[in-house]
Amino acid sequence: MNIGHYPPPKRRGMIVHSMILLVLAILAILGFLNLSSAEVGPAFLGWLLLALFSFAPIPFLVYRAYSLWRADYHIDRDSLAISWGLRVEDIPLSDIEWMRSADDLINPLALPSLPLPGGLLGIRRHPELGVVEFLASDAKKLLLIATAKRVFVISPENPSGLSQTFARATEMGSLTPVEAKSVYPSFVVTQAWENGLARYLWLTALFLNIGLFIWTSLIIPTTPRVALGQQFAGSALETMPSSQLIIFPVASLLLTVTGWIAGLYFYRWERERALAFIVWGSSTLTSLLFLLAVLFIITTPV
Image 1 (cartoon, rainbow, N blue to C red):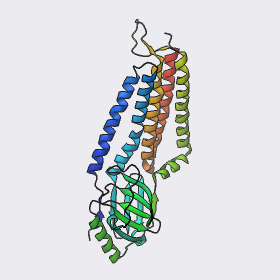
Image 2: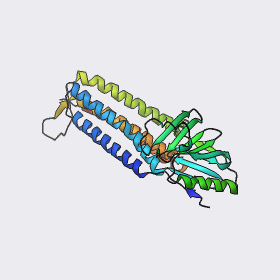
Image 3: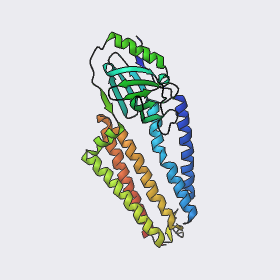
Image 4: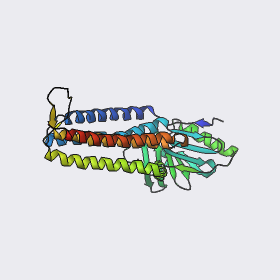
């Protein structure tokens, strides 16, 4: 019996996600580069918004691309395991009521929001099936898996092969009873929040970034120019408009968010949780260094 892996189609989704990430990265870099030379005014605000709105979706899309790259459907005589990034669903075969193609439905499935190729993820409600959770990549190869809890929608590269394997495994019976397991990305966040050190590092980094934003916004209107740029011994200080200071809290926040997500990735495994704390601690230290950098800049006489 062909028991094993039936991964979803990945190539098209990875290409689409990569292209979107490339465009967003170019826009974010363009925004930050122009922000460093713009005067306070509409142009400065425009470049700032472009940089922020371009960078904001990048961690989300990177996670979706990583989830697609690692996505897999694995079936054996005991269970069907669905892995999609931090989302894991292990379903005993005895809990599966039926398995069929989405094309057999009278009322077609409504795709989840943001239905990008390679990332059909989310929960919908169907008039016949009730709650439906998508963990799929290709709308043309959707396969429905009904359990007492909900209906899961997956998209193996070979839907008929997985269905046939399921039918044969059901006929042969289970070798070892297994328990159903559901792991959600939010579970990792909740688990990490219960750790005192992780909670302290998160809150410290958050307050440092909030304080840096507030402090910088108070400095810019009252200080026309600051010593920001390459400085050489014996030469006159190179000054720039104080509006350039906004780069510090923006860069600090972006690095903090990136570090927070990277830490959550390592926190999933007990043996690598030390790396998670190192990443979170480094993010907190980086925020503090940005704060000190602004302090040194504004205390330098111009």
